[in-house]
Length: 264
Ligand SMILES: [Zn+2]
Image (tube, rainbow, N blue to C red):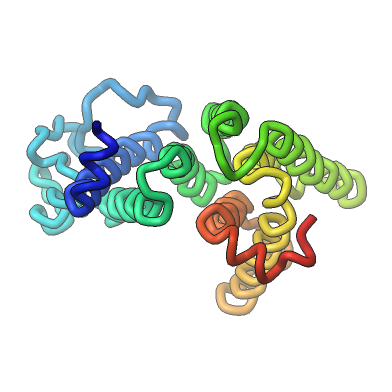
């Protein structure tokens, strides 16, 4: 019945998905802020990072509160980072795109779950060069389980994507460490690749590996040229992997048409 209702009333469904996405995004802000410090996600309640005043619920409404307060906290007037409303808007937007692309299907649900785990990975890796095990391992487990219900991959394709994707990166990092005598790619990237491969299936590996390496090299050169980085300036690799995987999940049919000949 729920399905009929949402199919019937698309604009209501779109509104509902945006609302859900912004609420999830609001929670993801808490994860992004607190996980690196080892703090609990549920207690204490949201508080001002400057004066520790608890934030009442009506000042904690995703996106709306930040705009209403014009980016300054009510308690002490300090600037509130635009990252908060950005994460909320981004989550809401990508939830909506998943719904518009896949409709009211299992794939849409899988995408929203993926985004819920991948968005904090993206921002935590960007700032701290870390990918939380709790997120990557949960992702792997859910991707394998999901393969029994999914229409885009079999369980075999999922488990091969996990083993070969993770295995390839593990081999790369092992070789790099052997030859350069220092750590290049973190083990977090190995686990992330295993998760992305499990979710996209075997056929997604070629594109994700190619696209993330290309993006990484492109941004790396950009950083060297414009920000005076050196070739040893370390960039977190997770964000490139996540962006590439997202592109594959959303546009796999187009990508397969273009790169079909080159993908296993
Ligand atoms: Zn304050």
